[in-house]
Image (cartoon, rainbow, N blue to C red):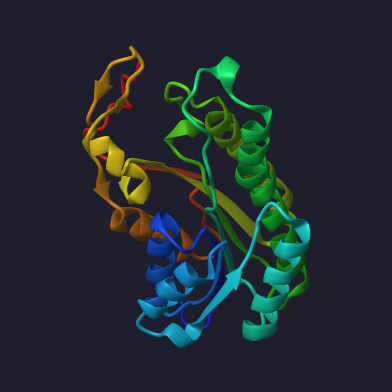
Length: 252
C-alpha cells in the first residue's frame, strides 16, 4: 500500500518539521517529490537526507503568491511528468497576543499562507490532475487540532484551520468528477521545532501554563503515507493523529 514507485508528489513546507518528515517518508518509499518552501538551504537539507535524493526537486516557493505556485507546479510536472499527490502543509502563526491587539498585517499573513496558499496549490493541482493521463490524484490538507478547538490567543491560526476543513470538503466534492480525492489530517503535538516550547509549558484554556506531551513526528509521516497509498477508489476524509496524553479531549 505504501509503495509509491513511479508516483509524484508535491509537499509544501518541506524544509522543516512535519513537511520534512512527510517528504522523506514519501521519497524513501519510492515517490518522486517536489519540495516546496521558502528557504533553499533547508529544502536542500531535506533532499540530502533521503535515500534517493535524485528523486527530490527542491523548489523555493511562496505559497501565498500565485505566480510562485504556478512556477512550482510547472517545474515538478516538467521534471517528473505528472502529479499524483499534493500535501498542503505550509503554515504559519501569529504572535500569541490578546485578540484585540493582533495587528491586521499579522492576521492577513496567516490567512495568506495557511488558507490562500492551500487554495492556490489546490487550484494548480486540479489543473494538472484533470489534464493528465491517467487522470486524477489525491490532495491531503494539514488541518491541525486547531481545526476542532482553539488554543488561547490563536484567532488567526484557528480561523484558517477551521477554513481548511471547508476547503477540504469542497475540494473532495468538486474533485469527484475528475478522480481527485481530498482528505485532511489533523495533528496534535507532533515533536518538531515548533513544539519544543511545549516541554517547558504553554498556555491552557484557564490561563495557566503547563507542559504538554508530544509524539514522534514519524507517526504523522506514517499516517500521511497511509493516506497517500490508498487506491483511487478509497479515501480517508478526516484523520486525527495526536499525542495520546495531550489535553485535547476535554480541553477547556
